[in-house]
Every structure is written in structure tokens, then in C-alpha cells.
Picture 1 (cartoon, rainbow, N blue to C red):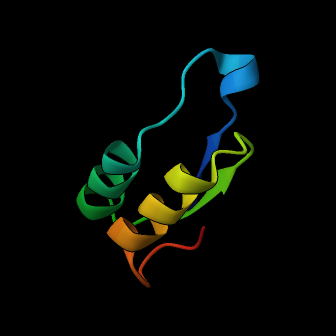
Picture 2 (cartoon, rainbow, N blue to C red):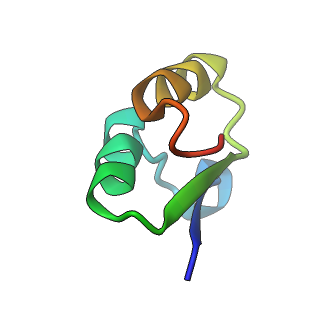
Length: 57
């Protein structure tokens, strides 16, 4: 079953760091995407760089 990580620190009190997202995507092949509602463009860009084409951001 595909998994999409959802980064919404306003409601969770925790912002998934780009390195954590990349590690999860590497470790679990069913992580297929990340939805980012944090608004931190630097974190989004870094996440995209780390996950490459494997995971949609």
C-alpha cells in the first residue's frame, strides 16, 4: 500500500526534517510522496534534492 508523508507542523508540533523524509523513503519502498503544508521553501527544496525522482513532493 502506498504511503504519503504529510508535513503539517502547525497542527502536529513537529516538522519532519528533510533528512528524515529521505531516510524513510529510502528504507520503505512504499513511501511514494510527501505533502508539505509547512511553508518552508528551503525545507521543501532540500527534501526534493534528497529524495530525487523516487518520491513526489
